Length: 167
Image 1 (spheres, rainbow, N blue to C red):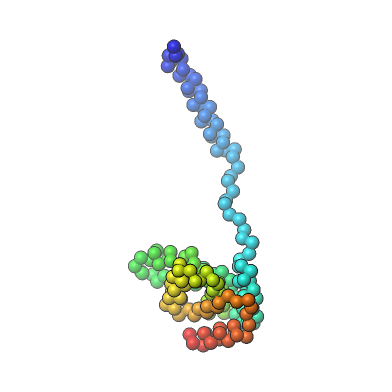
Image 2 (cartoon, one colour):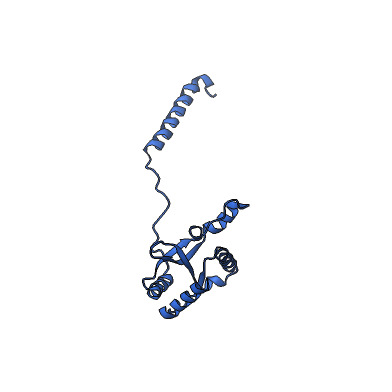
């Protein structure tokens, strides 16, 4: 036969108190959980790095070359736009491979995308079409360069000058 509830009550209370003390101690004594981030090994891929060096050679000291710039840092949604947050979300997580900026003012002069084979996928084609249209709507020129084994700095500079002279 089981003991009456009155005899078990002190044990139930004691176990409850011990559980509360245990959980409070665990909360107070446990080390603060580390954030789930780790440093990337590099800002750009090896392919992008090779292009970066030829791009710097091509522009000489005429512009700063900035890598991996968020689209939302280059363009903004106009205030008062319907569905503002929806439009903001479309540019928030996208980035441009390289940007040429004025040496003195850091004004944005030209965006450059290095297009590898992933740009042939349907989702990337749609993304590229959106980026093209978004930058065009802001009159920010975009130079698309196909990935290659090597890049001729003089030809790259000619393409940059040509695009900038047309915009």
